Image 1: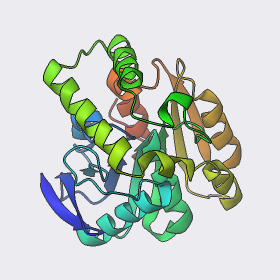
Image 2: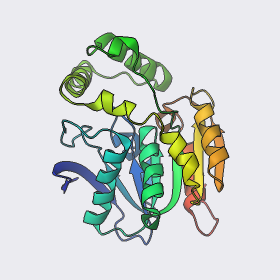
Image 3: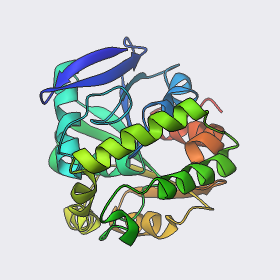
Image 4: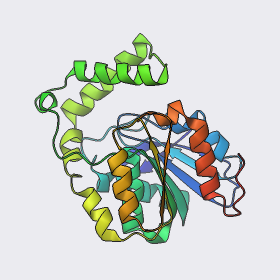
Length: 259
């Protein structure tokens, strides 16, 4: 674990297998952290690749910023991270909101971006739920955690729940995070207009409500491959072996995956 100064923020970063010739940078989703990849998926990919994980601003162990949670600002964090680490061109894996950051990097810095893998990234929101427009709603997030626990069979401890509420309450009440999310409402239109040429892997869960987003990206990214696997939006926790197999085969330039 290393803290890097990225756009004036201390960003938590982990590198695995630094001596490998190719690099995969993995970007987690909103209101989660790098552990979604770190526990199972990243170590397997690191058997062959240099794997870089980091906690986005305001997430995990990274420093909380008062603003800059829109796609473009968070993409700039990734771009500076690449510069700080001296990485010229990388493969990108983005889960959920992290998929936006991966795609935005391909749009604005094609010279830095090789292959892209998107995991269950949803359609950008155009409005906030009514009950979240005025104040932090702990019941809404409790429901989110219950759904996560039911689908993954993982029950957070009381201490972890307290930390979860403390962080999210701070993000909601003291930063611009939720208003920043609304700035992304036309992001998929930008993807469609960009005519991306990067080979792109779209991995979606057959039990997720993001299917239409995957199909939209498949239509508008000419060199894309769309697959559906068992699970819901928590598929990195539910079905990591399927993701590992698909990712490894996709990034393996020899065409010989390990599974």
